[in-house]
Image (cartoon, rainbow, N blue to C red; front, side, top):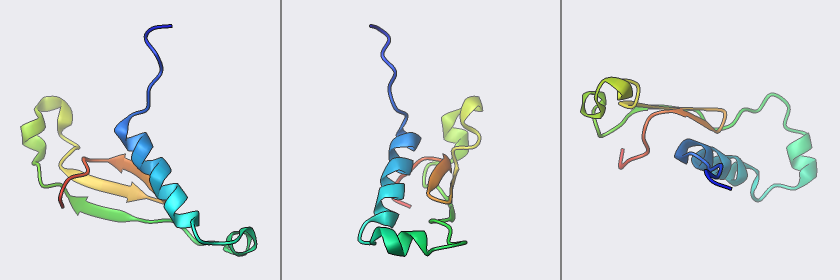
Length: 77
């Protein structure tokens, strides 16, 4: 059926980040990690927010909290 449900880029990046963090650990090690949070990042994007127009005012800053890509564009920075 069309239109088909698709993933956004932020959802794809978040899924990859969640799998990278767990990669290389045994289930016992993961279970013993109480209070450990995932990757957190706040950075500026190379492409300025004003270049996205009025709808992209939040895209100038990249925010990742607990392996979840919340805001911004993933670019060279």
